[in-house]
Amino acid sequence: MRRALRRVARRAGYALAAAGVALLLVQAWYYGHILWWVSHPPAMSAFMEHRLEQMRGTDPRARLRHQWVPYAKISDELKRAVVAAEDANFLEHEGFDWEAIQKAMEKNERHGRVVAGASTISQQLAKNLFLSGERTWLRKGQEAVITAMLEFAMTKRRILELYLNFAEWGDGIFGAEAAARYHFGIPAARLDASQAAWLAAILPSPRRYARGATTPYLDSRIATIRRYMDYAQIP
Image 1: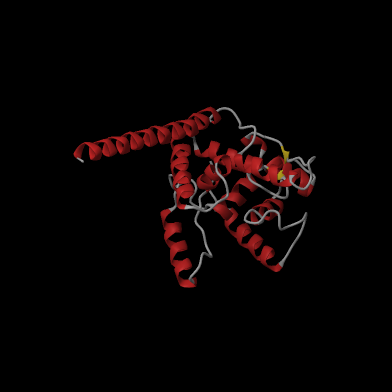
Image 2: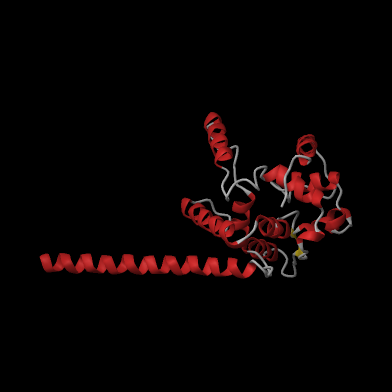
């Protein structure tokens, strides 16, 4: 009996060790990609691949609109608008805005359901680059690990550059350059404050709004973003 128990314990130990090694290898794979992307732009994000697969489910010839542009060729107005709308403390935190998380938790508690989130730009980038859209504790945990890796390996400027180049801004529209050309017929470098605020305002639901669309809610959100843009700090 003791011998059998020892065998079971030994096998359990081997299984745990194997699982630990596999987990480390997965994290190493993520971090290796992040280190490469410090100086090389990704060809496509995991979220882009997922959207393309969805689109080709109804149209086999569907294609994404995406064009990488360097940080200097993206309007500062768009950078300020996105920071103001998505992550006002972007330059101050190390990947997680604990104050915003606390406020979101309190708001969700009052409403009895999830009505507010507190994902930072770094967290959103981690999810877009690597992960699926499923909402599980395991995925959230992996998102946190990748966020910490991004913050450790990259500058805030690089994180924002990647975010702006891979954010979704319409059905199959990814990145600031494709968004600016699709919605306004101009390059990302020429976006003005009003155009930038509109693009920042649609980020939570980018496929809901057609070119130039407006609603009372959207107008209110744009006005709020415009008020805070001048105070938004960008790298």
